[in-house]
Every structure is written in C-alpha cells, then in structure tokens.
Image (cartoon, rainbow, N blue to C red):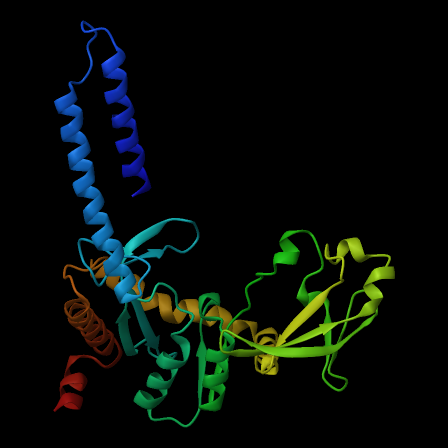
Length: 313
C-alpha cells in the first residue's frame, strides 16, 4: 500500500511537470498518467480489502494462492517458504510414524504437548520420553508434558539479548532455590522484589542495590538502576529439563535419527518433497496417504510381506 501511494504521488508530480514542460518534449500524456493512477487506485482498494480480511480473521498474513497456507521460515537462515507445518511423532525402535498432523502454525513452539499427548495415547503407555529440537522450547508446553507423565528433552537456545551486547547473560547468574535468590558474577545476592503476570504467565523479578558500586557493572548492564533478573514461576521445570539434557546428550542427537528419517525417505526416496493439493483438509489427506505408504514400506522391511498380511488379517 505504501508502494502504491508513492507511485500515485510520483505520477501526480509528473502531471504537474508536464504542464510546465515544453510541448515538443516527449513525456507520457495526461490521459496515460491518469489511467495509470486509476489502475493504482483500484489496486489500493484490493489491498485495503485484503488488510480488512486479515484484521477480521486476526491473522498477520494471507496467501492469494492457497488461503490456508502460510509463509514459514526455513531452518538455517532468513529464507521463507509458503506452505504448511507438518508434525510427526516417530518411534525409536522401528522409525514408524506413530502420529502426524498438518498445521499452518508458523512456528513449532505451541505444538509440543499436543503432539506428545497424542503419541502417548496412540502408544497406550503410561510414561513417554520425547525428543525435540530448539524450535519447540516453551516453558508452558514443557510443564504441560511433565504433568502428563511425558519427559521432554529439548536443548535450550541462547536468546539472551544481554549476551548479544557482550554483557553477562541470565545463565551467568546462579539461582539458589533454598534462599529464592540469584547470585551474580560479582558474588552479590539478587533478592525477590515483586511479581506480575505477563502474557498469561507469572514472572518474578530479582534485583540488588549493589549494582551502583559494582566494579564490573559495565560487563553486566547499561541500566542506571542496575541489573534485574526475571524468573517464570515454574522455571524449575525447565531447569530440570536442562539437567536431563546435559546428563543425556545422546538423546538430543537421537532426535535427528528419528524425525529426519521419515522426512528424508518421503521427500527423496518417494519423491514427495512438496504437496500437490491446496487447502488444509486436502493437504492433510495427502499427507496421510504419504505417511501410510511410508509406514507400509517400513513394516515390509521389518516383517516381510507374509507376516504383514498375517498381522493385518
């Protein structure tokens, strides 16, 4: 819309210039410029309609080719691709797809507990260990899993804004559960000051008055008031998971061998690297057929055709 406005202003300026130019100079005629402006105004109305459609649906983007699809970031860089977010739960022993779902959610952050609970139900077990990548790291999701008897193993991404500025990050502050305080790199105690609810979560704030005279303050904060540390009310759930990840690094590596196995097979060996259908119901049906074909091939490899037919019968 901004681009269209700029073009309209430019054409209007050109109309004014044409009035002042010599008659023999070659320029677009007034009629040609007015036609261009009219077409731009029509395009502006289309964009306004799309903007209203997004606002009414409380969406941040819309695809003109497939309204259910979304522009999603590709791993390892700033590039994006318009498509769908496909989730799979894969068992460790046979690499079979236990459960899957096709969504248009742009990130994986809110999908961990949903997929983990469904996998637990499908397997009919009381307890379950789940491995996922950093994209699934979300405190509330981890807490929901633990409450359902599901133990997640997710490495924590370094997202500290302070670290990026060359300052001490939160990981440099040690939490003391007995005293409910943090110890800073200078050995000072940050005590609990207050708590408040932010985005549906209770956050606790810790601080110290020692920052003003601290000799290493320049390495810690640029705030005149000193450094503050925030803590989620249930952060011990994440701390326990971090200890699990550190004590079992092989489980984090196991995720790649599980989740990437079926995707690699389906995309390359079965030549299904993209969807042919549009609309989330149709794409879900297409994905179901692909995953069914993958599972049948896996079972044939594991059991052989006679035993598979016998089991199905």
